Image (cartoon, rainbow, N blue to C red; front, side, top):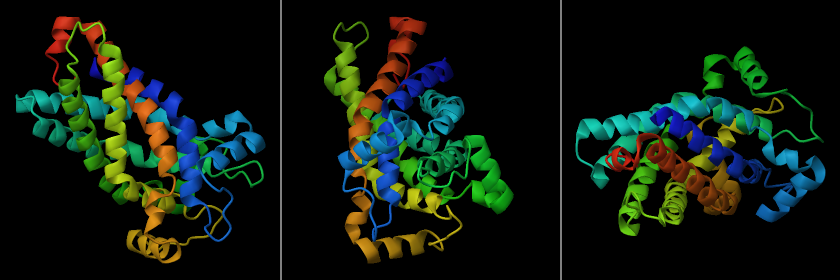
Amino acid sequence: MDLIAGCVGGASGVLVGHPFDTVKVRLQVQNVDKPRYRGTFHCFQSIVRKESAFGLYKGIGPPMMGLSFINAIVFGVQSKGMRLLGRDTPTNQFVTGAVAGALQCVVCCPMELAKTRLQMQSKSSKRLYRNSLDCLSHIYRHEGVRGVNRGMVTTLIRETPSFGVYFLTYDVLKRSLGCAPGDVGVIPKLLLAGGMSGIASWLVTYPADVIKSRLQADGVGGVNRYGGIADCVRQSVSKEGYMVFTRGLTSTLLRAFPVNAATLATYTLFLRYAQGVGAAGAHPPV
């Protein structure tokens, strides 16, 4: 049941937030010497004007394809972990969330690699990949397994604390807001708790996401700029200063609230509907 609820919640989140994610990636990896976009809204307008509204949904295939696996791991591991630990405490919410976040990287990293590469393609540039599977196949042929897992370390650095903070914040806010089963006003409260949980998790790990995006976009067009994580950090800070770690943050936070509000609220309500209010009330992560 956690798998099904996670998939339904995740799908709603992807549909709501993917346009913001496309803007975020374009801003994170654009050339600082010849920037194409002045900011979040200029990037959004430029994509729609030059590539139509569908341009905002480039790379949506990988998140949708990996959705079942990622949500099966995240919600399944977190829920099972809470049952094994036996106590529904904030610390346990963080620990089980962090473990779930680390384990799902095996699917998340290749998926986000393909997403990033597809998002970097525009109508004015040469199309290297037809779709997400073609993208991963192309990378595997030229770079092997290591290429398909490009950015794995930074993904782990991002996802492990991110999901810990995610589940911890959601649990604390639900308790504070009084999201009791049967509460007629529970939906707005769940949306608020989910949205704020997403914002909190991104604020904690955003610098790692910037480096991950740059490493995964590196090599497009045959040119490699970075020799690894440390070199990417050094070059980025040297050219753009420490504010580079906030590049695309506005788009990310604008995306984080509605995406996670939709994801966690849908997940919670789906479980309550499927299991009944009484059973869902005893369910650890809900």
